Structure formats: C-alpha cells, structure tokens
Length: 276
Image 1 (spheres, rainbow, N blue to C red):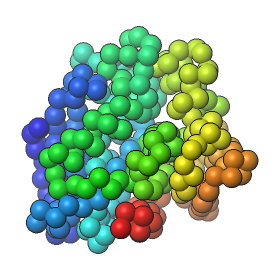
Image 2 (cartoon, rainbow, N blue to C red):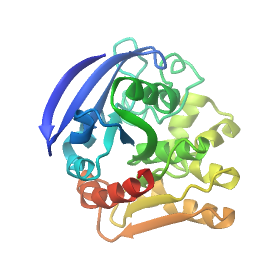
Image 3 (spheres, rainbow, N blue to C red):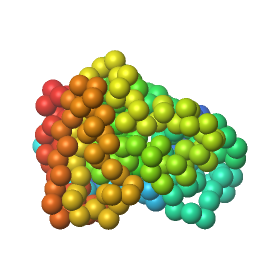
C-alpha cells in the first residue's frame, strides 16, 4: 500500500491510500480518517461509507464534514472508490454505467466480469486490509449515499452479524424496479432477473435472517425521489416482513452533499452507539 494524501483534521488524520486489489484485478484507492485515538495506536471501530454514481473516494471526505463527528466519537471512517479504474477496465460513455458506477455487485457478464467485483472488495478485501494495517477493531458499521446507500443496505442484509448498524442517504432501495438499477443490473448480471434479487434491498428484507434496523434518510425535494429511489417500496417490504425501519423524510432537501452534511452528525451518533 502507498499513502498518497494526508491532512490533519479535527486532531486526526484524513488520508488516501492506493493498493493493488485482488478482487477487482487492479489499483484501488480509499480514503481513511484516523481519529486521535487511532493515531495513538488504540483500536477503534470502523464506519464504511459507500458513495454514489460518478463519485470517487474524494467526494465524501471533502464534502460531508464527517471528520468532526468521527473525531468526536473516536470512529475510523473508510470511504473507497465506487469502481475499478484504468484504461484496461471496461467503461461506458454513460454516467450510470461502468467506471464510477460499480453498483457494489460482482459482475458476471462481459465485458464487466473481469474487474467489476465491488461486492467482494467491500465485504471482504477492504476490511481485511484495514484491520491488518491500521488500528481498527472488527466492530464495523456501514452507510452510503444513493448507489452507495443501495450498496450499504444490500451488504448489511446479506451479511448477518458482520455489521453493528447500517444507514443510508437517498438509497436506490429497489434497483430491480427503477431505471438506474435495471440498466446496471442488466449490464453486469444479464437479463435473468432472478439473479438481480441478491442485490435488491426490497427483495432481501423478506428473507433476512437478522433484523438489523435500517435507518434511511431521504430528502423530500430530491429530484430522483419518484423515479429512481422510491423509498415507499422499502417501507412496504419492511412492514410486510416485520423488519425494523426508520425512514426520515426531510422536507425540501435534495440529492446533494448539502443534504448529507446536514444530517451526517445524527448518523454518526447512531452508528457510534451501536459500535460502543
């Protein structure tokens, strides 16, 4: 691994590292915030953040204002890139497919299957790397925004016992039923829709063996609310399955990091309580 960026922030260190990933078969970058306790060598719990379409490891660490809350609660924050990158990696001219749009799945269809294995990267490889090279405990939580909110919900639901808590901002809760998801899942997994269910939170809650509470933050002024996000589908599925859900609708807020920055402190408090 190589550290390529470091900034002192709120008594801790905001860093960016790059490494060769076996999951995606190429170089990956991730941001990591180490609070003061971690810099002293004390093991700290970890919050994994998954970003949305077009994002890199930079968006969350520069726009969310998360360092203040990570420092306050003594939590390490890890924010990976959203896809594999590079000239040898398949891509698309569309913003919602290819590089920057990994959708946190293991692709099975060419030309994506060789590198687009973000599910394995986030679930297995990245935590193993973080816990081996930094003073990170195995107490983990996960969160994300939009495509990353989809990833956080799916990963938490599919891995009982691995995460203490999960939350999402403006998540794509039912990718099998909305244009963004239909396009990506069709491209990465093929036309057989049964294969899509393993990456669809609305489909997964009905069979979840662990009733890990879901915290979902949604802006009422989000331009993607009605067509792409559709939180009412998750609300209906959770009610049917008896799965605990807090759905917070915030009047006027849009899909941007202005929304995330407004409520990220509440999410850190929520995760810190579970991680204590």
